Image 1 (cartoon, rainbow, N blue to C red):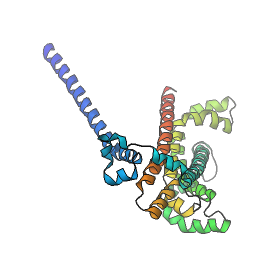
Image 2 (cartoon, helix red, strand yellow):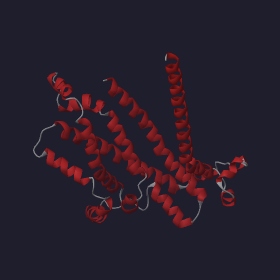
Image 3 (cartoon, one colour):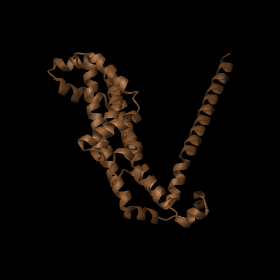
Image 4 (spheres, rainbow, N blue to C red):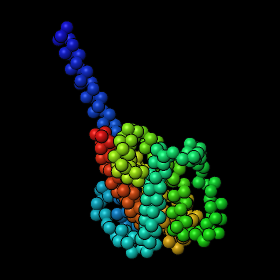
Length: 289
């Protein structure tokens, strides 16, 4: 019996390891297939226009001499692209910071502060989650035109903040509500006020949710085209609108679009991985506590 049980145990371990190895291989293949368009975009951005017109991007594997950085040098000299990157940063960073800060304060208030109509106001916030952006384009355009901020960076930032806050408040309120009440009461007994309680207790524990919110908001604003196309200044548009204008003006100029698109993609990816590390550290800190 013991020998049979040992053989079954070894067979079970071998089957588990084989299944785990097959799963890893499958996930690696899926990841490589998912990254294939990005690799193609990178290689296309490193080829001359004549080479791009003659063959596909996979030609570089047999003719690596085609690779050149001339397209990126041209992009750095293209004032439209460089100016659009700056405009995108000036829109994305304030819109992300304001949503995270205001959403954190409102989420804490809805989770742990008592005020008249708190539950009803939170229901209003939840209801705003289902309002599509397209519904507000015309009335908000008229409002921004009346106050003089239409086609300005401030107008784009305010629009993104307004539509990003409902999700931010909903997410952070639900996360903050899971903090043990005993922990907050102990801090209050030690003399901590609401501001100190929020900055010293709630914010550190809410690191995972805040990092996730920052990632979502940054990526959404950076990659947005609809709001930027309508509300941004036509003289200094964000990168998404600038690339679209390059297509409209010059046609199929891949030597400009490929490096411009790849640069616009690298920046949010870098931000994502930076916040990803913070997110993981926040999860581990919360687990230890």
